[in-house]
Amino acid sequence: MAFLELDGIHKSYYLGKEEFPVLKGISLDFERGEFVSILGESGGGKSTLMNIIGGLDRQFTGQVKIDGKVLDHSKEKEMDAYRRGTIGYIYQSYNLISHLSVLDNVLISLDMTTLNREERKQRAIDLLNQVGLGDQMKKHPNKLSGGQKQRVAIARALASDPKIIIADEPTGALDSQNTKEVLELLDGIAAQGKLVIAVTHSQEVADYGTRIVHLADGVIDNETRLKDAYPVQEDQGLAPRKMPAQATFRNAYSHLTYNFWRNSLIMLGTGIGLFAVLLFSGLGNGVNAFIQDQINSLVNPHSINVMKVDSTKKLGSAAAQAKMAQMANDPTKMAISDKQLASLEHLKGVDAVEPGYAFAGFTATYNGKHSNGNGLKTWTKAYTDNSVTYGKAPTGNGDTILISKNVAVGLMGTKDWKQAIGKTIKISMPWLSKAGQPVQAIRDVKVVGISDSGQTSVTVMSYSSAKKMLESVKADTSPTFVSVNAKSLDNVKSIAKKINNIKVNGRYAFLGITLVTCSIPCNNTSG
Image (tube, rainbow, N blue to C red; front, top):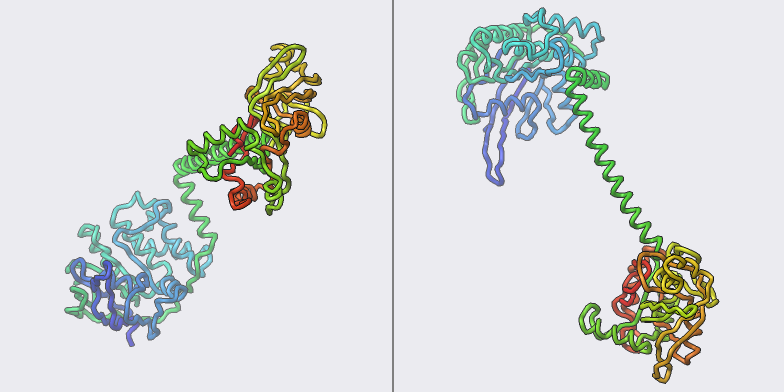
């Protein structure tokens, strides 16, 4: 019974849906002790056939049998064990590991055997002596000639004592003298009872073996027996095993030390790159957090300021903007009804609803000095305590007010503007009574704080003061805006959307809600 059997091997490559057959039904038998040359021109399928025999190519049809047992190429572990314990490769380009010495290149294959450390080293030395490199063991591959490199590759292929040696164009890069020496080594390996299969396009190389198989266009068109196979002596061989992790770490350490300065520079550059990425990422996050903190320190991100606009116009259009300007001059058109206020209070996710007043302009008077402003609102949770630079916020039911630095300077002078805190000033502004008659609303209020936010001519007073001021002139006390506070930041956008969809008496009650993201003054909260 043959040691290696190929039965009906078919292999095709595909370009899209177009099929390109490479092997067209290859059936071959191989015996141990043979030196078989697979001869043929480039593109005939020689390397593909070797990859299938070596367990590297598993996408084919047909059977591969080893010692009468069919190999299952679909099982990864079975193929790993087959390659590790049965196959030895000799490559045309040598594939030596540059940072390992000649001895270590052979030892790396012996790491996958059960030999102890001393036994592995002694076997590597014996193999290198066998291929004539006993005096080159400490050198690295870049110090060797092409013939010497191929001998190292042969010693490495023999290290784990495989039963099959596959040589892919083993003499393709060698001169005539080295070619002869390598072929003698391969013939000697076959004489030891191993199966040597060499892929070549050279007739001279093929004539050195025991049998020639000629492959052309994916089929065997000729087979020649040159001499009988060598006799086979039974041997126990070496027991294979998986490469231990220690060998992997040792190999990595050898690579690090062999190119220490180059690897050190690579690691340094990588470290600098990673540090730069982390640094700029951290700076970006820090700047973003700082900006968010500054915004949130002046206004409450949970708050939505709502004012009534013309629901028949699209917000942002020229007509809508003109309509809003008219509403600002006619406070009765800005009034929010009790029904509208109740519709806001019943929205899911709302924590609190605070009515307020927004006035277009006012005059502050103290000791005969006047200071005009163009924005007056009432305090709500839309503001935070950080909006108050000096003093405190105008909360509660008292007649209190927070004035801007600009107003304070107009009343107290450039040097003494901070002295405005604690003073009682007179606030007056034009308004309309319930009968629609122009009136002058006046109220004495106590300055409890000053805002120095960089903005000018804005004042914020307590809700109770503003309401009493309107009551004193018999004006409509319906709020002109509402501050809606969400329970959580995640609810803000959904609440704003719900507010836009509220209908009262068949019409949209509010249209075009603007989220409050402004510091004092909040002149853009009329959306």
